[in-house]
Image (cartoon, rainbow, N blue to C red; front, side, top):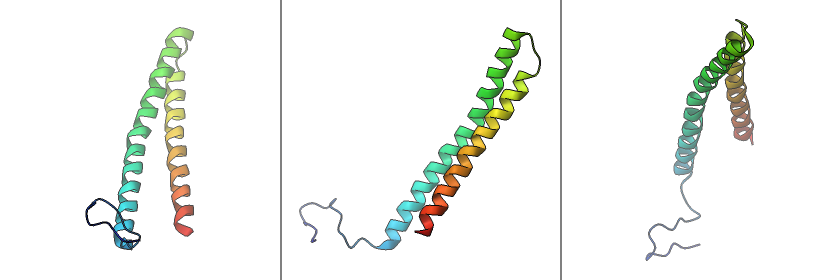
Length: 91
């Protein structure tokens, strides 16, 4: 397929693999950056939800339980993403 010179934004099939690799690296960087924000947010939300439940139920341990569950959910997301990336890089 030949690129139309009147359309400079049109991609060709002969795009160098270095550019494709760079795009993939930036995409992965963006996805992992999103995880870097999601992990602490999940932990904080879990903690505050647990504290709220502590107030409502008259207990004193649900804040820590919520924190641990939030941290665990963040790590599950991280491991899932890492395994998906490892699997896609093998093929």
